[in-house]
Image 1 (cartoon, rainbow, N blue to C red):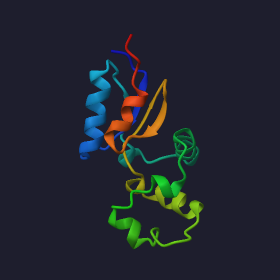
Image 2 (tube, one colour):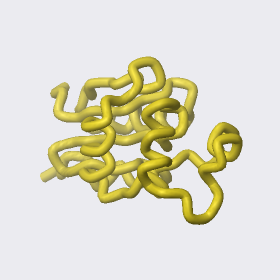
Image 3 (tube, rainbow, N blue to C red):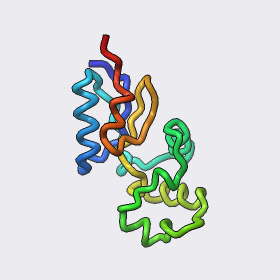
Length: 121
């Protein structure tokens, strides 16, 4: 197995666990980032969102009760306010993010990971 992938992983999330299993089934042993424990540096989170082509509102975990509590679901909330909340509370970042040599994506739904896996010949 090669380590040509990174998974921002929440082991309690079934979609995140499925992404890990799919990466391993494809012959990849990803670097696992336990983002709920480590959090994100601002440059790291901005880079991850940019690589995935997402804005902070698009990567916000809307089902997380804290998003509503902080007023992040209201119309007109600035991207920078959402990003700041994500940095302060990593649980607000949707999951799982996966990066491979083929790109970076938020793999929700789980099928999105397929575009990131090595091409078999």
